[in-house]
Length: 119
Image 1 (cartoon, rainbow, N blue to C red):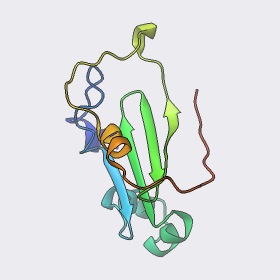
Image 2 (cartoon, rainbow, N blue to C red; image 1 turned 30 degrees about the vertical axis):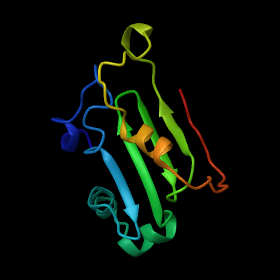
Image 3 (tube, rainbow, N blue to C red; image 1 turned 45 degrees about the vertical axis):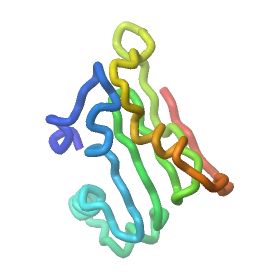
Image 4 (spheres, rainbow, N blue to C red; image 1 turned 90 degrees about the horizontal axis):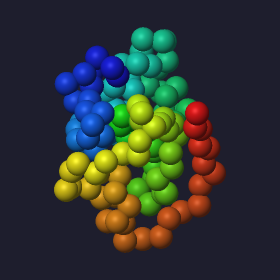
């Protein structure tokens, strides 16, 4: 992922490039996940057994979040403090793709068991 994202990684503007860094499984396997799985010997069939059929993963500087299903809640999987301990500055006028999904949803969230991990 580091190699794939190297020209789309902006720690001072974490939302910039978030669409490029969004990993989707929507009844089709995301090519990055498929490639990583192949490198460790997992088949696409096994991946579909292990992962939800609809999964969105946002890999942003200082945060990794996910949503299961189209109407699921967005949950933080990993969060890291920014260097210097300062809160993120909103340097962009446009909202992140996570915010667009949160505010653009018209139906209520389904209930899923979620796990969050933070450091």
